[in-house]
Amino acid sequence: MRLQEIKDTTFFKLMLAWALAIALYGLLIENTFLLTLAGYTSTLALFALSINVMLGGVGEVPLGQSLFFGLGAYAVGIGMQKLGFSYALSVLSGIAITIALSFVIGMITLRLTGAYFAIVSWGMASVAVVAVLNLESVTGGGMGIFGLPDMQFFTIDLTSPIQYFYTAAATLLLIIVILNAIRQSRFGYALESVRQNPHLATSLGVNVFRQRLKAFMLSAVIATIAGALSVPYTQIITHESLNIAITVDALLMVLLGGTRWLFGPVLGAMII
Image 1 (cartoon, rainbow, N blue to C red):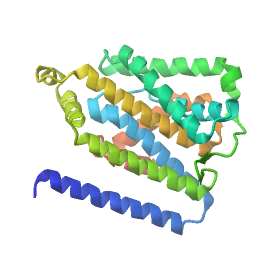
Image 2 (image 1 turned 90 degrees about the horizontal axis):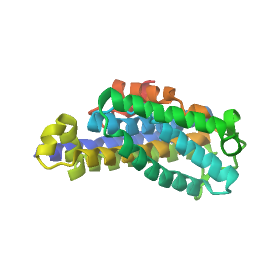
Image 3 (image 1 turned 90 degrees about the vertical axis):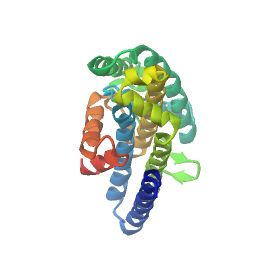
């Protein structure tokens, strides 16, 4: 059996075991607090995965990743309370904005590497915090956005602890499957070459900047989804969702679980 076939079989078994564990947890646990906490933990694991796309994928530390987590949360708050959107439409709007914004930010920041990229991305998140605090008519300023209507994702009631848990956990599993497929694609191999040696990758015809930009945009979308999924748990959106402390917590999850293992950030989230 080839090494890739062994890896595929192992991944399938892990995913099956994880899916069974999720199903059993939902069936056996009746405590609403434990169910919502598990759902929120899945959300944080999703955010940690978004960071690992950059850290484990191209070797960059995105200290400003909280910008996109907060964008997802504010997209839900503003969309539902200010614009009258449904939860699903608010999330989709947030993703659309994230794609455009991450492209612009990536074009500016990804010319930098190492500590320079990390510091500039942190600065972007800090600018977002200041903007949120000053746009009181839109974001609620320091008080934030609260008193949100019931959140339903099509027929799924996210105010129900069990449905929130299953939705967050299922989304996490789906993203893991997608990231695993990406790792085995041409894009994934290109990212690996960029992470190991960008100069050698360039000499082999890999457009290093383009691959870094695609990875950055992918990580931003995942972070936005995580931010949107955090709202049913927190029930309030404030500038704290943009705080670098959230990024630092997620970085610890990634480092504890390991950057090279796809389930690493999930394990780290469970530990923290």
